[in-house]
Length: 267
Ligand SMILES: NC(=O)c1ccc[n+]([C@@H]2O[C@H](COP(=O)([O-])OP(=O)(O)OC[C@H]3O[C@@H](n4cnc5c(N)ncnc54)[C@H](OP(=O)(O)O)[C@@H]3O)[C@@H](O)[C@H]2O)c1
Image 1 (cartoon, rainbow, N blue to C red):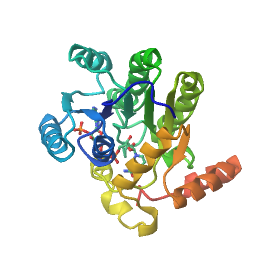
Image 2: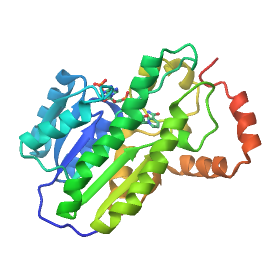
Image 3: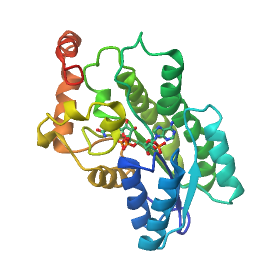
C-alpha cells in the first residue's frame, strides 16, 4: 500500500483505556503513529498517554467521551479538528456485551448498546473518511468478532451487532479502497481483556480451554498488519479461523440447534 504523504500520521482509537484498544494504542505508537485515545475513563487514558509518550516519543492526546451518547462522534471530530489533528487511521474498538435477556433489559440499555457498537462506529467512519479521501490515505479497523459467524446467544444483540460491523466494513472498504483508504473488519475470538469482567461472565469463560484464548497484543498486531495489507476481513488466530469457516458452512438448522444447546454464559 502506498503512502500519500509523509509521517507522522495519527491514529484515533476508541476504547483505548483497556484490553484490545489499549494494545492498539501501543501498536500504532510503536509503528510511528501519534495517537488519539478515546474512552470514558479519563484518568486511565491520561496514564496511558503519558506511558506512550515516554516509551515511543509519540504525541498522545486524550478525549474522554461516552460513545453511547448520540452527539459523541461529532464532538470527537470537532475536538480533533480544533487541535489541528488529521486522523489517518481510525480504530473503532469500543464495545461490550450484555448478559441479560432481551425482554428483561430496558430499551435505554439496548439503545445505548446499539449506539456504541454500531451507530457511533458508522458515524465516526462517515466523519473521518472524508478527510482520508481528500488526502488519499486512510486505514480503518472496525472490531467485529467471531460472534459474527457463530450461532446466536439467546436474547443477545451482540452477534447481530457484530454481523452488522462485519458487513458494513466490507461495504465501505469496496467504496473507499480506490482512494487508498482501506477498512478491515477484525474478528477476534476469546481475548484476555476486561470484557468478561464488564459482562459478568469471567467465571464461566475461565472454564474454557486455554487454546481458545489469545492475548490482546497479538490481536492488535495482527489487526495492524491486516489493514496495512488491505484485507477487508481478518479473523484472529488459526483456531478462530478454522471455527469461523466451519460455523459459516453449517446449515441454518444445525446452527439453530447449536444455539439452543449452548450454555457457556447461562450455567
Ligand atoms: N475480549 C474478547 O473476548 C472479545 C472477543 C471478540 C471481540 N471483542 C471486541 O473487542 C472490542 C474491545 O473489547 P475488549 O475485549 O478490549 O474489552 P475491554 O477490555 O472491556 O475494553 C472495552 C473498551 O471499550 C470502552 N468502552 C466501553 N463502553 C464505552 C462507551 N460507552 N464509550 C466509550 N468507550 C467505551 C472501555 O473504556 P471505558 O470503560 O473507559 O469507557 C474500554 O476501553 C469490543 O468491541 C469487543 O466487542 C472482544
